[in-house]
Length: 497
Image 1 (cartoon, rainbow, N blue to C red):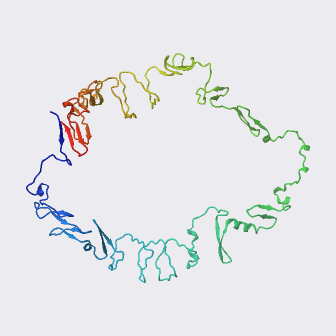
Image 2 (cartoon, rainbow, N blue to C red; image 1 turned 30 degrees about the vertical axis):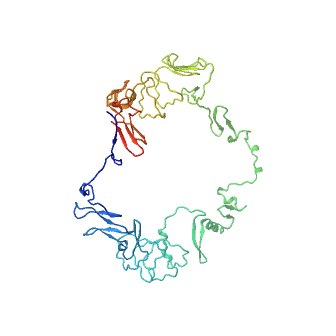
Image 3 (cartoon, helix red, strand yellow; image 1 turned 120 degrees about the vertical axis):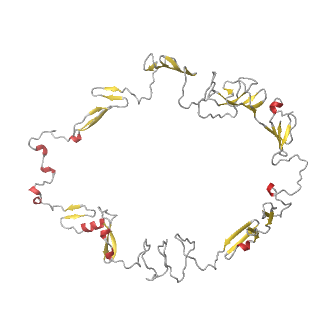
């Protein structure tokens, strides 16, 4: 007869009247081989693996266990911290600190290659000599004069200061041949170095030019910046090549009174223009030959002897005509009709495939959507089979209702296992009033019932131990087996079997 039975697990209370051992549980069987152990101690083994486990008490703050040939022993923290070290102890803690002031260190041996970093503000080596190989110093500061014997060797890098104390740099050391060659001079950005009565100064190229221009004299003068001015009356006819005559004043020659003068014979062509009108391009003054061309706008082709509408139209954005009834490639093949008010019909092979009216859209034939499809309203699919071939299925609904077309029947989820429409099912067995599982290949895709091979285990819980038959699931003792219950007040676990 099936009934509730208690399961003894780790942490649960075993229903045993008593448990008595006639001796201490040996170490080999998981015991300690002793009846008691010291308080606040660590366990240690003895010389033999069958001896009782001992206990080494650690009741002093900071004490530690140190191994030895005669067994481990407790060592005080003060014994661990030697000269230059300080032990700081606490309840369960031990910290060994290096004293800040070290007086017992007398020598530091040769160090391996690397870097020595110091957080000190200054390093004072007294009157001793500091010998070093290559050294990098961020800032080298001297508060007084530096004698020749203080710094020797070669120093490279940059120097900061006004250079007033820098001596010994000879003019011969300035090698102009080592400089890069220039190709042009900037009027104000390039400078020359010169001595102004013994004082070194710089001067721009523009100032040098103006100084040279200022020394030009005679009938011509050059202003700052390079403008040349020739004095009035300083140029005579004999100075010109070939003795060409020079006349001053327009009244000396009367063009209209000259021999062979013809009115309007000489016209300034740059003052006469041909203007293109609407739809034309080109034109301009008559200093050269001008051509007027018909402007080709969007969708217009200009040929040698005519203007035509382009066959491929890409610029037209609207075609509206109240008398428009049909548009297409062939009146009996592919076309769109507009003959009925508030209705547009699309025909393929002279058969209507799509009809759009004020009531909605009617599609005749198979609909294939190559991209995303969003249905804002309800989706009602009629037929005998609905197939979804998407890679992943995502449903926002929290509950899915199955078997809505039947009453008091089996139903569930089938995972295909044979590639032929059959598989294993997690389903509701209505006759057993319980969820169950069928094995692989056991349930067909068009099945209307399921025969579970195992039932799922459901767990109930309350502050009391179970009694009587489970009431939530199962219709008989055979279909209730495996049901579980947890007593939440004491953690006891019960199984119905």
